[in-house]
Length: 248
Image (tube, rainbow, N blue to C red; front, side):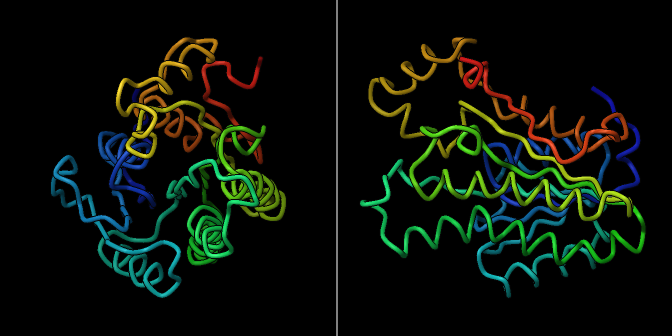
């Protein structure tokens, strides 16, 4: 899959150290884009040093750290015209009565508020340039219950609403926002499902119409399309990539 248009663009990706975020970084770098990568973890060996990669360590739930990381990335590679708000964490499927206030606030800060912070930091320049694309990471837990606990499901539903509003508010000014709703993706975040005899992972695959887990690269490929000019008329929508899970 080739998108030559990315060669002259800078992409900002959060949650870049592993899973879907890392796959997105690798995919955009392969398209010759410059990438500002942000994660709370140190740069993994899988992401080799490159003049087109500015890797910044920051907690996306911390506004000061996030601001500093974005400013450093912009200083190195220029203003991003594409943003992938991918950072997120699970809540161990806890129902509301087993979710503490601290856990609730942590999940929302990481999964939802980080997207608000990133957006508000880069959107003013995008509006000046009259061009900007957001690909926000939701989940099937943003469309149906069962994909997470109370906090995670609430955060992912909110991401979908935020994305729709972002697009409606700024579409006429050259901004485009959509979100992806992954189902079962084989990432470190889901490692617990594969622990031991992998009973949970096997059950998930069995319950998925496609009968398998997807790889992060499949979500990254979808990201490339949604960020490209080929998707220019796709606005404020949610694209599931779930092997048919929500079609059941």
